[in-house]
Image (cartoon, rainbow, N blue to C red):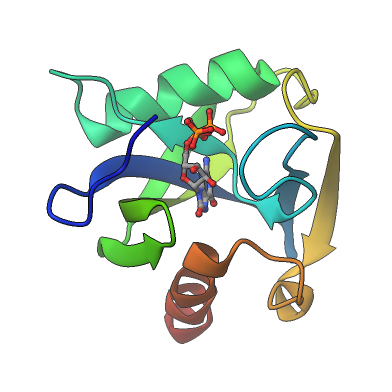
Length: 136
Ligand SMILES: Nc1nc2c([nH]c(=O)n2[C@@H]2O[C@H](COP(=O)(O)OP(=O)(O)OP(=O)(O)O)[C@@H](O)[C@H]2O)c(=O)[nH]1
């Protein structure tokens, strides 16, 4: 993927909350930001709404279904290779959802919300965590 600062790439991510824990996913080897932790999600396809992209990505990546509780503001982040516009959604698993499985990530963890600002978090996700903290 070629990212351009003039044309940010739209990316959605799901902050999936279960009690006082949040699901984090570790990026696999061979990808940008390999080994860093992120919220599951991915790029919005042409013609797709961010919410539809979120449900599609979660089914592909984790095989799970969520209910969106709240949409956050979009956050722009410039990486050395280009710019992304990140749309975060606070979500919960639906009562019928299978347990999330790491189809594309190295590992999944349910971490306490207070631990999310870890040094190995994807840099674009720092303002997402601040948004989440301000909601509480
Ligand atoms: N899904 C997701 N992507 C994120 C987050 N934070 C963040 O910087 N990103 C970046 O946004 C882009 C999302 O693309 P993607 O999920 O389709 O991942 P990908 O590795 O296939 O993308 P790539 O084409 O850059 O390699 C990646 O470059 C990823 O590093 C996040 O919390 N969730």
